[in-house]
Length: 315
Image (cartoon, rainbow, N blue to C red):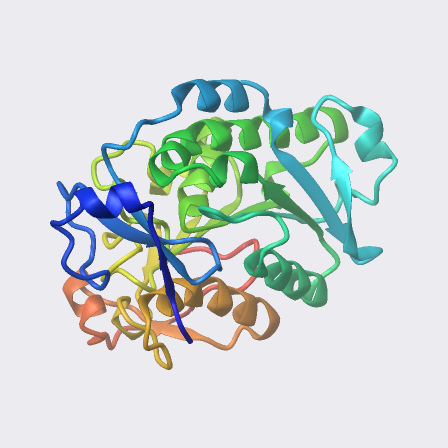
């Protein structure tokens, strides 16, 4: 697999401090590389790049600017578009509030039709008769990294308002909702849960993004849902390294995944593992006494399932 590197010539000329794309982000770095969501392209990020606050404000002020794409067993491949505030868009769809609802959120430079969304939609519909709602926030997610990152919290709150609207108008119980987000989407779904005061039954963050999130209060935390699970697959480069859920899984130590020669591959393994465990529920993790033991893959405690689609999963 070849990973392309994309950067503006002006950025490259001024970024002489960058030695190698394989150097991971460290707090205080001005420049770093980050992969687009599923495109295997490393993009040069300048942390001092202008942030389009006006676009964030315009986009995030109305949660209807997000796309909410419904897939069910009756329409597994063709999305039905749900529109917040438009009752008919839901009433005339296959949405069934009596069933469990899974919401998927992509990451940076992604969209609702990316590999992660398709694989997880297929896995959940194969595993159970559920509603799958894919959040498409690509209009903001495809802006420069710092602009997209700064808009994550507001987009997450908009998603929370959409779920609350389904609750108020169609009786969707928060006990029947699971939110899943990859990379920047991992923090996004945390903010959606926070908007609902942590009442959502389960949130799963898949290798939530690391750069610029170390001291950000909008990052995912355990109180964002009744059960928050985090899968760390690339702590060495692109993913957030510290525990931030009720359970944090560090497969193979959390930094580099088996079969991956590239960090982009390890980063994406999180949603690949999740899709596989939803189908087969076959991956188990040993409980660890310390994070150090987890990152060194030296854990011998009780076995717990990693991932899977069990809405009632607990610590």
